Length: 170
Image 1 (cartoon, one colour):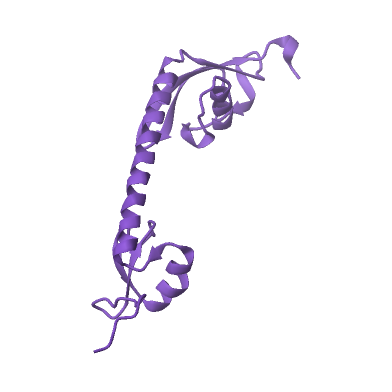
Image 2 (cartoon, one colour):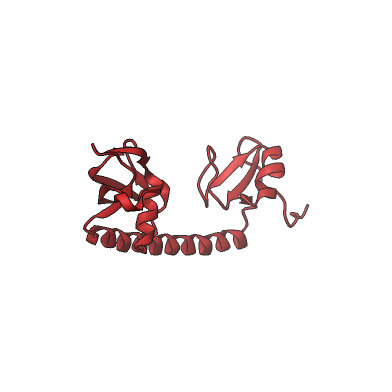
């Protein structure tokens, strides 16, 4: 009776190799899925990149522990983002000064980076990618800007664009 080798690769129903995904792989599966792939794809890409492992009891147990840690980290991140959304809601309005002519037309424009920088100045860690503008702001005035913080958490902030004072022009 032949003995099973220690790290023998399990064959799937279609003759491919069965692997346990340790990370999400686009067009293949999510973390923790048992997938069947061609031998070359598994041996040359998934295993060396650490995206999959052989499906044995020890690896399944380690993956379950890792999943629990990932879920806890995600919950903590969501809680932090909700707190930040509440802090942003308490900000009455942001004031951004920009070079403008007498009619209120800006010589440049105010964009996502400017709004993000102003929020960071108020100790709110809002990245440029989180700010959603329909277009660049090119006139002085009051605008309502939507912020997508992540995990479907959104907030709105009022931005007042005012001209620079005459003595401060560069």
